[in-house]
Amino acid sequence: MADNHPNKQELREDRFVEWILDAADYVRAHSQQFITGGAVVVLVVAGAAYYNMTQADTRVEATALLSEAMIADDNSQAAEAIAKAEQVVKEFSGTPAAAQATLFLANRYYAQSRYAEAQQYYERYLGDYGDLDVLAFAARTGLASCAEAQGDYREAASRFQEAATGNGGNTQGAVALLEAARCFGLAGDTASQKGVLDQIAREFSESPAAARAREELAML
Image (cartoon, rainbow, N blue to C red; front, top):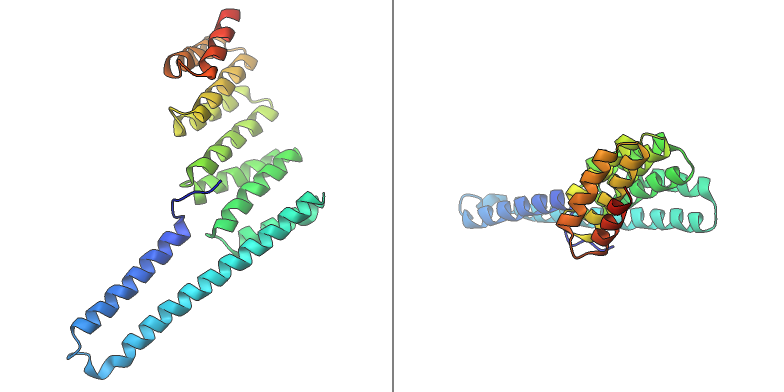
């Protein structure tokens, strides 16, 4: 899903370019003092242009490699897909492609029941790219699913609640809370299960999730 917020790499590039432009403006404003150093301005501007061009090339290369990983995945070449995605993460850290590759790896490892590795990449995504809200929700629910798959239902419930907190007031938050209530039920913690279902019924009173919560409360 498209996201209009700049990621960390883009913010770093923007700050660099802003610094270059400010420096150029200062030199122009003090042209008499820098009359013999005009070449400095040219070098600074040229350096900025080269920097931006290099970064653009890096993003294209990262995206191309991620595409190769996804094609391999579509062709059921799991080992090759994982190897290419890991290369994207390692060599192109900070790019949008690396963010997607990180979550891609987490999901693929989860699908292979390699939960420790999946958890590692979900946590890495949240640490490096957690400012991308929609994908951060996927990473948080991924961590919850890892805990549930390993039988740690209380941890899973807590993780689902964290995901809901990050997406409070919307459908995703309500769904995450339903999952939290289910995991509390699996853990045998009926009191916490009822508490979460009551929360859904109150905070999402007009939603399908609230109707589901009321149905489940009636059965407890």
